[in-house]
Image (cartoon, rainbow, N blue to C red; front, side):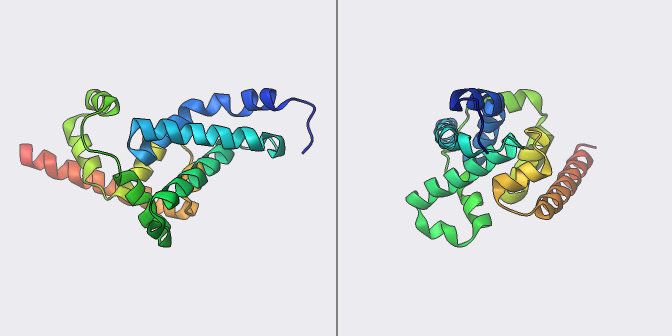
Amino acid sequence: MPNSTSADERFAEYVVPELEVLYRVARSITRNATDAEDLVQDTLVRAYKAIERFDGRYPRAWLLTIMRNAQINRVRRKRPELMHDPDETMSRVADESPDGADAESLVLDQEFSAPIENALAALPEKFRLVVELVDLNQLTYQEAADTLGVPVGTIMSRLHRARRNIRQHLEASSEEVI
């Protein structure tokens, strides 16, 4: 779609307002601050190169799709055998970060009580990631689906099951206290 505005103006209009969301999602996907910054930078470079072809509709979904593809390509370069099953790939990508406390963990410790953290941590990765994207990062179902490369129905199903599992975990932990 031809546009009289420059690439820099379009980038400032459509991409810059989404930087915080991009970083939060990258952080959820990579589980590592340095990798998240690299992924966001790669996404921004790709978005800048393609901004003239962007039609201006749904910039967040467009950027999250770019990010998802960039992450898949990054993983493929590192470990091509992971590309046989996309769900398994996203799970393994998130598991590649080193263990240990980081700034995000410290903030989460302050925001969430231990039982909630434990319930979230007890979820299988594919369910935990959906909770982080939708409930914590406040993405829409469609944005989460675009990010993970799965249908919206899968996001809804995983989120329902994850919330049910969290509720059951919290109920069980409260019974232990009583």
